[in-house]
Image (tube, rainbow over all chains, first blue to last red; front, top):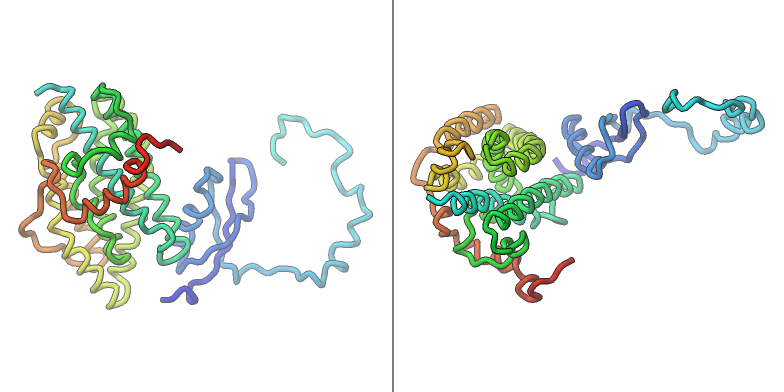
Length: 95
Length: 252
């Protein structure tokens, strides 16, 4: 099996308990076990993570840059949708 | 036997095994079959280097003559190294490296699991830290043995060949000399004969799952415990020691 046959995977790392998984990058691997192993070796070697998700890139569906105006621009002038008008108590932790 | 001398030799060998196998693996840096696997191999190499640093530092302290990790790692002569012969064998192809790595990883896993309970507190502490990494090493190398053994006809045959040709170097890991007997008698380390049986069981289990045959028992190489090495070792040391020999005492 050559490199070209290995599917691409997207890697998501949770850096600490309570935080969300965040997209860390991508890699090639022949199957899910090795994708997780590779993700561990490539993306958590500097103590970045406590949990790993991988998903084959082909299963991710995305918006295209051309749709930016119709999808996102209308939110620009609606500042009242941001919960920035009150303080979050420290005890709440990560939101 | 004087226990200081025995402890020195016991810890030295643990450190040498990690140093030499780690160095061999580091030769893959930039040459791994895949970018991801290249990084994985070097992670393992760095783990081993970390183990050897802790162990050789301790060895130097036990000796009490002011030798540090660098002095022990870089300025001894060939015959003064006591690493197992299997650690110094050339990398060969990726399957050869994985066969070697798997056999030593399983050995290390069984050994360090026991060393966690060593009566020597320092060895126990180093082992407690190292065993977590070693458990991952076993996972990584046995995964490849399974994939290549139970892969294509080509990969299966080459993996079988790798195990068959390296097998004669496995006996050397379990030769029990006076320092091992001292370690057993004083609760410092495990009985290598017992370890050997557990090792065979685990190796056979993975090889069977990988559709590979356990190699035939036959004549075994030995010599590492008296400082007799393979012909490859001098070349390895030449590279490993180059910097300290060219610039004695150089530090990063």
